[in-house]
Amino acid sequence: MSFIADLHVHSGYSRATSKAMRPSGLWRWCQMKGIRVVGTGDFTHPEYFRELSDSLEPAEEGLFSLKEKQQEGDVPESCVSEVSFILQAEISSIYKKNGRTRKVHSIVLAPGLKEASKLNEKLDAIGNIKSDGRPILGLDAKLLLELVLDVSPECMVIPAHAWTPHFSVFGAVSGFDTLEECYDELTPHIHAIETGLSSDPPMNRRLSMLDNITLISNSDAHSPAKLGREANLFNTEMSYASMTKAMKTGEGFGGTIEFYPEQGKYHVDGHRKCNVSMEPTETRKAGFICPECGRKLTVGVMHRVDDLADRAEPAPSEFRYIVPLADLISEVMGRGVRTNGVQGRYLETLSALGNEFRVLRDTPLYDIKASAGDDIAGAVSKMRSGDLYIEPGYDGEFGVVSLDKKPPKPRKIKKTKAKKDGMLF
Ligand SMILES: [Zn+2]
Ligand SMILES: [Zn+2]
Image: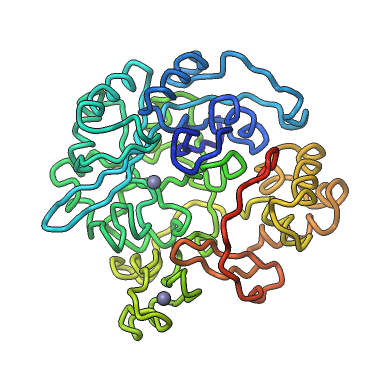
């Protein structure tokens, strides 16, 4: 069986996360996206754990489905499908090791509510798991791994967005240079890392030290529209055991669906406040100092990979790039992704053609042309062939996709606006 899974998301109990991020919302949106198995997010949060226990029921072995399924008429008929949940949380570890402050995010997967509950009990004794859906604990990432495996060897710990500067195992600011430096003798229990939005498999495959590590990709979504912006392909039976086995051995793991890493928020170096972005060579020349304000530049993922890589050319890997459909529609319409026009055409396209992954990956272009219009078909075609330009992201600012193969207009620093009710993105 072949299916798509997104194994890292957050719930409304995490900071800056949409209230629609709960089982019913995930279920609805995964159908529209074409995601067959989705992480629950945040099972460590006591209230959310209660909600999960109440609203989910066992489905395939080690996976769950929603008890009360109400389509409420807002999943287009063409997208209606099954969605299963996998128990998933993320822990933020902040601690000192080898004389430096370390900040590492870890994804945790659990095979059942019993195991998740046992883990929650242990974490509750260590720190505050109630204040945020992604709890911040003073727990060494290695000790977290030990504790999780002690709860059940079937649980899995996966370093999250492994290259982001501030909160990751290899991050430039507070990470490590090797997995061994972080996990010591427990390193063999790390079987997979999440590459994150700003890096892709070819970048990671420049490091021979990751040769035996499965590279997974997830959305880390804080709102439902972002689900599946990265995801994994599994060619296995649908069960917790088969999926974790695939990630541990690589067998049955079909590779990833990737964001263009340039579109990620930390691809190149820069200083967001000053609107300054720099390639690694420029950063080195500038002595890591922002030419505008004299502060330190944030070293991005490309730079960090470059520092730790031992190969000029990557070993082969299996993956495919996508650009989220709403971004493509926004670009062809010349309007913001949150405008009614873009949201309307997004839903029309799904209603006519089926879920987003199908449209982006499989639907023949002539069908897209006939149902969604020449402009969207053209954009999907360019996306599929990689015939586009992306102004790379830096220091927390997302990259910007342009279908004209030329740099988009210079960006202004965006002020975050509150979303209006009923907006999709
Ligand atoms: Zn994280
Ligand atoms: Zn600056």
